[in-house]
Length: 453
Image (cartoon, rainbow, N blue to C red; front, side, top):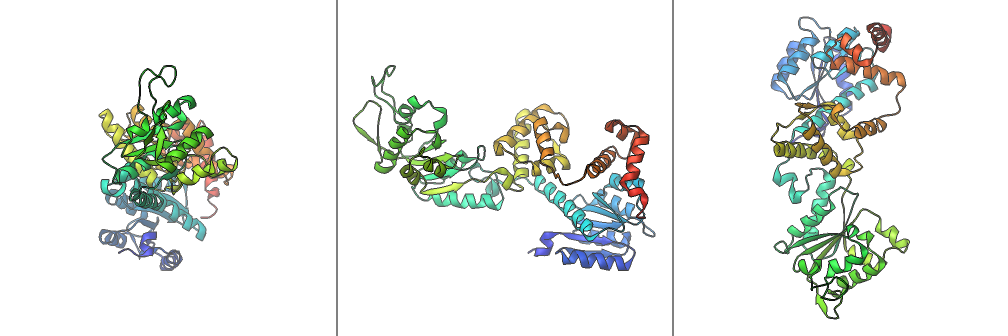
């Protein structure tokens, strides 16, 4: 069983200076990490062969075997371990070489405690995101009811679904558009004793008001112009099973009275008939609006609200579901690649980061749409940020950290471009739209002119 510190992260610090080893072990240990130390690369490699480690924090200049060789060893042998480089001999070529070889972060001595903690946190977040993206959900674990999830907020939803399914009570399901409210309603039905009977979904907002009563309750022949025969409605179709009234907030006050009668008296009237029909139907309803605020505005009946909300289940937005985003991404990539007969592409770390930071206003529905477009339109083996829809790229940029200075953003971008082309300055200058001389100035400025040594 893992400890809290192991859950936080397992780190290996490598440096040939004992005082630095001791200081880093003390500082990182105080932050709750499990910290191992090694005085050189050979000792570090031996430890790595025997002990799983999340992040290696290594000096670059060490006797016998350099930090660069250690980075190379980690990259070639330990796919699930990341590297942070620390050095007192900071230079752009060294930084580029370290990044090319496989380091995720590069810290020049002297660095502050906060710079160290931030670098470690960023690397661990990337590692955890990649691990989550690579996990395929097991059907019995995450795909219950068709709702793919492993987050605690969704596990609470699963527990609520199970409790609701054991009763015959009316359920009101709330949540933003695209969160999966109908899936939750289906889950309640198929986990209930009514599972063998029909589940009938009705989008109340998509049916014209003048037709909704007839669609729900049916009509008799001659009830209105065009009623050439008697026809059953959705409540008759759902007899013995469940009816799902989506967008319930869009119904008129007149229709709400009729729905209230069904819930109170368990009966309804077909349009044009004076004979009541019994309703052996379990009702679930859903809304993406705040029904109570509509009650206060007198646009939704208070008595109907209480009849509907005997049990309430709130489906959280995708942005609050943590690594569910990455698990769903995997599911959709596999689904649409299989449908198209294509090899499933991989997502770059930067795309994973964008997905985690993006607000997802359209929730799961938007994510599925984005993945379908990407898989359909690209032949690449690795999906990168330029492959994402333009609107999503722009919105992600707007939602990015806006507390940094323009100079800081420029430095990070230049370094990222340079690392992406394996240190090729000519290619980097071409991408940046500047000449090599200007690039050299920007790179010199990014290290503060080497003043920190």
